[in-house]
Length: 292
Image 1: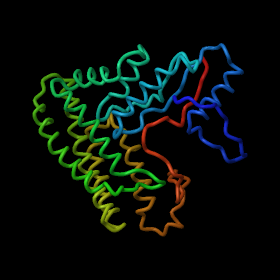
Image 2: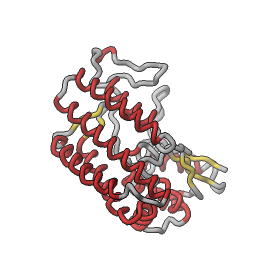
Image 3: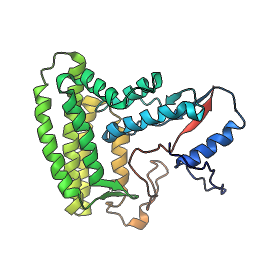
């Protein structure tokens, strides 16, 4: 957590401000600890936020756990989401190992996980998870809606070529006899197929009409329902699809006039225009402290 003066944002009735910066987080924490200075304290955190950023999410988790003692915490409990092992269980593995010994080297933990889960081609799998996420971050970002960057055409071509090359590695490991590694490669195969579908959706978003984007998203959504049939024990389909529903169906690419794309009280879809947010896994804004 970067050094900086702790501060608590001004309170305005009916206009709560989420804790989004390290300075705000420390301000709330230090004010709370004045009333509970010596008791046993832990952090409750929401880490697992989808399959597209697992490599960097592991870095965030490892860094946060290393700071717990300095901040006065004796441990951490995550949000207990269960279907967060798609395409890998890397973030959960790093969380468990770091809580046991926060001095462990992050790169060594990554290497250990991919070697144990995927065998001799674990290094290739680790590189694919890392680089594909970097390419996706250069392809699109969120500014209230999903925005394709000027670099998107070149990055999508790079992603497609990368998937094609990696599918050969997946095929090479299709006969894995170790049941755990076989299942790991099974999920990785579906992940590669999912990324190919998302790349196709992004291409249509670059050049297509709103109606064409909607039609392509519905076809992609139907494919993701197929993924769910095979991967539901480890993949939160509803949460992942809901993200694209919000930003494709109910956002900029909706065929409805933008002044009538408003929040639905039953589904919780955001009003237009939604607040500007970032999809990069830096500090997680929804932390809560608890005492035991």
